[in-house]
Image (cartoon, rainbow, N blue to C red; front, side, top):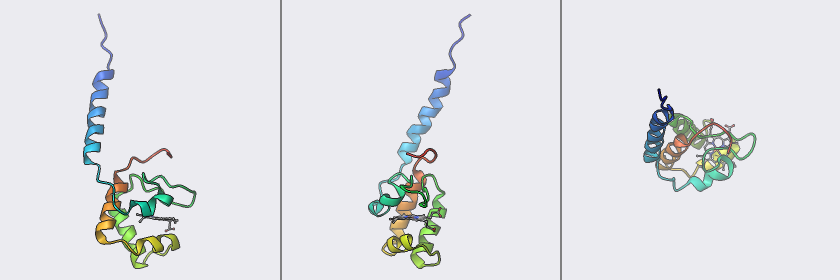
Length: 106
Ligand code: HEC
């Protein structure tokens, strides 16, 4: 009796969901360049002391950015960059970072 390897059956759903994730990926935000030096384009922080943003909850990111912008949440580095962000910029950046794959440092 031939035993069919299970691999193709297991790999297909993974391939399909990877394709779906790409299709859902938001466009690169216009202001991403403001953030990348510290948080990386993909949300992997560039130095200790800077939080990773990849795969963070989107609503959390929107709220945090609003709090830095208003000064409710105080952090010198974030105050300086968030002051010039519009609500649309914040939405776009939150959607972008939330959609990045988290996990291992890149
Ligand atoms: C100069 C470095 C620097 C730049 C540039 C920068 N950040 Fe940050 N960011 C930080 C640091 C440091 C913190 C942690 C601050 C704190 O203690 O609250 C932080 C915190 C955050 C947080 C909160 C994360 C959490 O887990 O609560 C968000 C969201 C964030 N940054 C988004 C952005 C976005 C979006 C941009 C671009 C508009 C940006 N940052 C630009 C250094 C930076």
